[in-house]
Amino acid sequence: MSAVEQLIARAEALLGRLEAVLPRTLQAPDWGASVAFRYRRRAGGHILEPVRHVATIRLEDLKEVEPQKEKLLRNTEQFVAGRPANNVLLTGARGTGKSSLIKAVLNEFAARGLRLIEVDKTDLVDLPDLVDLVADRPERFVIFCDDLSFDEGEAGYKALKSMLDGSVSVAGDNVLIYATSNRRHLLPEQMKDNLAARMDENGELHPGEAIEEKVSLSERFGLWVSFYPFSQGEYLAIAAQWLRFYGLSEEQIAAARQPALVWALERGSRSGRVACQFARDLAGRGQIEPVPAPASDSQPPEGLDHV
Image 1 (cartoon, rainbow, N blue to C red):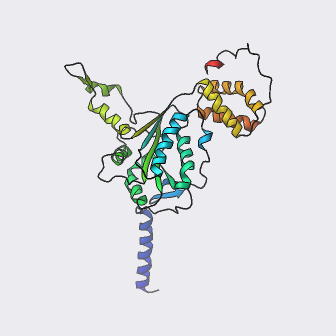
Image 2 (cartoon, rainbow, N blue to C red):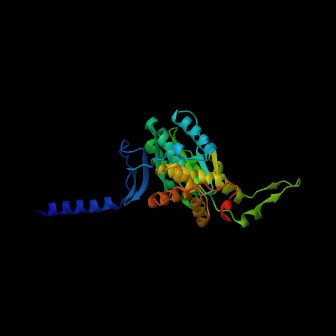
Image 3 (cartoon, rainbow, N blue to C red):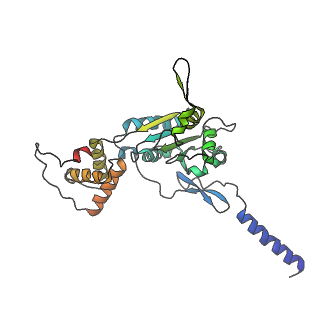
């Protein structure tokens, strides 16, 4: 090999190493591979990965959240039909079906072109790149941020705030943002934030700039969908639905009522997630047997009727 050929080979090897560490332009995935995608960090950049096994949950599987279901269905129907629709913030008690509802809505409208892109809050700074990537696609895209909340100074907060309302570059009409959170205001609220509040001469209270800043992000979501803790009856109805999903008979479901209450008491919560976990455990063990219904004047063990 001549000296020139050696030099060319070394230059090519150097370029190869540089390409491995330089940021890569975001490439479009195989859009036909799935109806859901994940935005993930990889060496040298980010990629959109098709989700090979999308959750199969359906709207009819979700119980005791009918008002929330109606709101999100209506908004998504508008979006898929090409009519004006809002970005959505789903907030409230943990385990009550916020994320499950978004997945169910995806399954409901996937055949009509709805697609979902899941983005972690640390990657929200790349939202403009994602919006540009899908701008010319015929599908309708929901960018999904699960369990969203921010600490002071996180970069993703400003990026999301600008994209929702306020940036020179706005999202196209084929993109909406659906986010879930356990709290309505997505930044932590501290007692010191109230020190800047003032009262005018008429006694009207005006919040300080710190408070205004912390509520401004959630206010940019056009639609709020609130979820609330389940009552005992609602929890049992959800547990029964999951037991039917796992193939248990109605007699077995009736016999599982008290074990379901004990399970919730031990977990300190009677959410939909806890009901699903109970049903999965019971169906896996397969040990429940039908028992006679209790007498009408019998009472549940102390404390179970207050789970």
